[in-house]
Length: 354
Image (cartoon, rainbow, N blue to C red; front, side, top):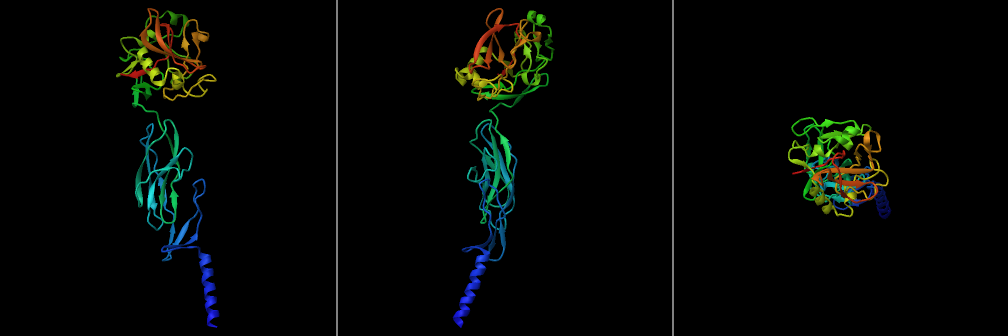
């Protein structure tokens, strides 16, 4: 009879254990578990410890990215609840796709609740990354919200011209360049540059002048200047900068590799450049745009030609009494040519830091 009662009690005990879950020796008994899925999403995971206390995953948020450079950024998190048990690891994880997990790249930034800061390193230039803070306790690993940021090209800050336009910059080798075409309508002193609308007048100008395509976005493509404007004693360039010389472009092309330098300089895609925009990678970050040119013989209205076909960038280097050098980029190849053009033509301008 005693044996029967003992067996009965054992059966009751087994049923209770089966209903509650699997015992974690020395700590707790699982009451419900939903594991992290392949997308890094977490269900309601909790654990009942030996004192009957329900333990849960930590609660946390991800800090927005800051101090973003070409290969690094700063993020972190704020753990507002440890879930009833010690936080044993915390940090951020990141990848190029949404909802990264600790199986991706990660930092390890101490233990415990509260805020923490994480240094994200070894990133690729001009690339979008997703980041989530994580925190681990005895129940498992929880994640904060997904945030994203895009790394930048190495640069030397921004620079403004006398006309109030601010330009992004890019560092390429030992040089720092404007990442955008010049837009100023004034010389450094504040004196106005002459605007010439007539094609025939334009071609006869021997003093500084500018023009622009009326039907295109000058904020994007910038203005076109004759050679006399860029070589004026009263410079076009902001203080501490100068309009590029032919030697400046030679240095740039040699650094990028002569045979494919044009591709490394051109903006990618065919939104601004004509298809196929051969070899364009913009790996340098220069982001050259096809601003075309202006002359009195141009095929378009007012003497404008080749916008979205080629990019022509003046240098201050004279080739003869009537000709000067310019960088030439074309949609149909990946080369960067240093050609000579009539000084009366209207071309785009880039400046480089002194």
